[in-house]
Length: 76
Image 1 (cartoon, helix red, strand yellow):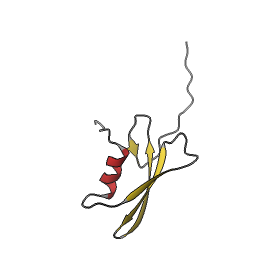
Image 2 (tube, rainbow, N blue to C red; image 1 turned 90 degrees about the horizontal axis):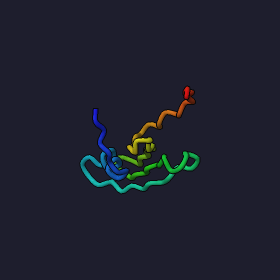
Image 3 (cartoon, rainbow, N blue to C red; image 1 turned 30 degrees about the horizontal axis):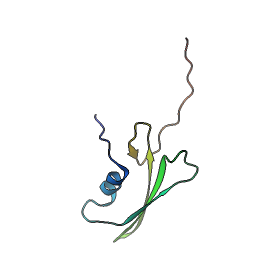
Image 4 (cartoon, rainbow, N blue to C red; image 1 turned 135 degrees about the horizontal axis):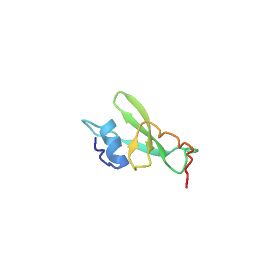
């Protein structure tokens, strides 16, 4: 399966605005590690929405956090 790289704005618009424009604000989450997590706040007609987006090592924004790196051993 090929993944398509989209900007954070494109990902947010895909999640929040399938049919109409919704104003939103992006805020970085502190203690999330080098700006890899943001909180998107939007005011929608049915009520306020907050979604967290995580940037993975491949550069793609997703709504689930990346898996932690595991220690590995290698033989030279």
